[in-house]
Amino acid sequence: MPLLFADPEVAAALDAPTTVAAMRDALRAAHEGRLVAPPRAAAALGGGRMVLTAGHLVGEWYGYRSYDTFGHPESEQVVVLHDGRTGAVRAVAVGEELGSRRTGGLGGVAVDALARPDAVTLGVIGSGRQAWTQVWAAAAVRPLREVTVHSRSAARRAAFAARVRAELGIPARAVGSAEAAVAGRDVVVLATTSTSPVLDAADLAPGTHVNAVGFKQVDRQEFGADLLDRADLLVTDSPAQAAAYAPPMLAALHPYAGRLRDLGAVLAGAVPGRTGADQISLFCSTGLAGTEVFLLDRLVRAAVPA
Image 1 (cartoon, one colour):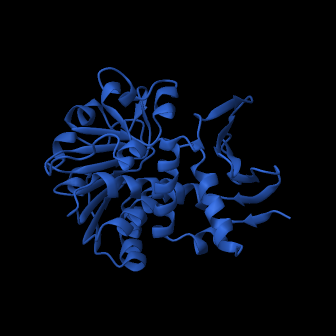
Image 2 (cartoon, one colour):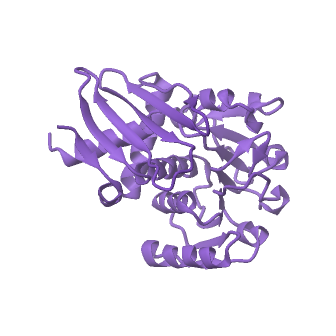
Image 3 (tube, helix red, strand yellow):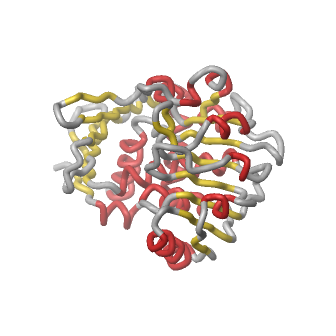
């Protein structure tokens, strides 16, 4: 019978170092052509869409993640892992934790690969699940000394800062503006649901690395062209997905598209990453397809001794 994982089991089994390591391996596999990861597909079903991301680790497994946009309160993501030799379903994960930790893990890889080695402060705009896993993963790759957080809700940003202190053991404080959250920070995380820019690129200090997790298309984006213009280094986890957005992704348009690098290629040393302490780097997270399945496979391997 397939193994079934719900959010509590996923949360208990996947710590940040394990998740970041798995996502680093997935990005390398995609760059090498071992992980087949096409852009996501969607089916309009009247009142909403079903969205599918699929991946195939050649010779080992294939699988998919599905979710919908109907907005039902009990709607959940589903990730399915198939044995690549027999086609049998090996495992199913239901809930939000696997996808959130996957996205956080990709962000952690980006921080490790692109932020300055001496980065110790982090500012985050947003206080939801995605903001949390970004900080959670960043703390696994840099010895963070302070986190500042801003979001629209004073109560939620205060609760977020309290959680960082309690669960990560990192000094954290809620602040009243986006400018205050990012001022002088070594790493900045944008993880909002905003459809208009929440950040003024002029507020970033030289040498800052930015992870952008939310909307980044021409008709809705949590950052504007000013950040793309100021960034010395533009990186994404899936160039194929970046090129496939409709409407287009800002960073995939002229004149930025020619500058957009693949994080897997940076990890492999095929293209350069940061080359100077004062450079501003921007990671445009798209969610490389197949990475949820990659993470579920690691979860199964940990749960079932060889």
